[in-house]
Length: 438
Image (tube, rainbow, N blue to C red; front, side):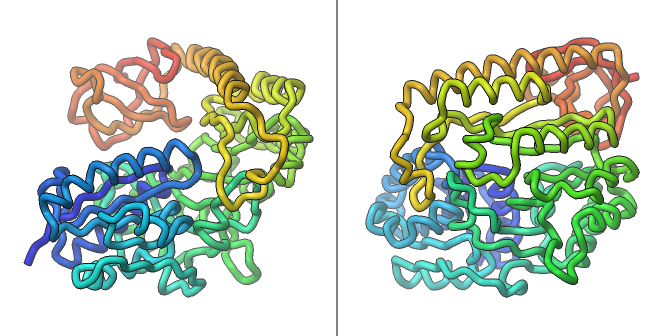
């Protein structure tokens, strides 16, 4: 008998893609996705533990679902993802409406876990595994939310143990997916009409670094030959794994987008060392310079974390100076928040929240100004835009993204949706561009 599934997702692109996998997996087992939680037979909440705000949001949501469960006792509520992996059985005690807690390595077990939860409350599955068959289903093609672009997981986990990060605790150690699975999935997506794929991994460019595995730049080269795939992106990379081969890929691969997301976190060597990032400010700047030499039109985006324990005003100024030097096209900026189980949470020199917020505001203001200047530099250019359809905010116009991952709204024929179209840039805004189809 058909059942209805409602999925709620918090956090990053990896979590979004995990939810797409869950939807595809359960659709094989007579579940249909609904956008109405009141219609659902099963509600699954895919959580994030990277920032405190994301945890507060999912806990608040589960509080609202408690009322729904009271009116519909047969409703099954499951919590998965990083926060589920981290908090485990404590979630059952904290949230009596929750029937199932499943960790980041238990996703493929969901059909049997839901069957078990239907007979008894309090099912918990948190075991880590290094078995490729338990982590990656070669026959599962996720249900992408976008007709023209899709995510493809290439690796999971992280071995670096930055002092502020919970990823090794919630996602486990690095494991790379077999390249033939990745290529098969890319071909299947191309046959569905997907033009752009984004390769995902917690440290995506660490893919294939074990002996005998295909290196990341060779995987990119193989994907570059897949018929129908017009654009390749990847996120999130680590400076430690930007190899000569990867830099050369930006020089010669025709479908690799001129965009590199390269988190730096801080511009202070002292803070980088305390974060255990394994590179210096000088080394990071040198990597950017080499990538820009190979691909002059490349856009560099980054992650920045301010208010780290012990960060002085001088340390913070060094971060602002690096931003001015590198001129990031965009940046995901965060104020530090303590994460349980990390080394940084135990540091004695935690900064007051007021200082963290004040520094974040200054960081955002500088990045907004730089990003706006970078956008203005594109006015007059003709950009190839992957057209996604009508703009959500201006439905009389079309919307899409440039190779540098800039959003463009423009006047054009709706029949352009799903194609790569040349667009002349006529206007620049702080976070987007405007133009007209050529």
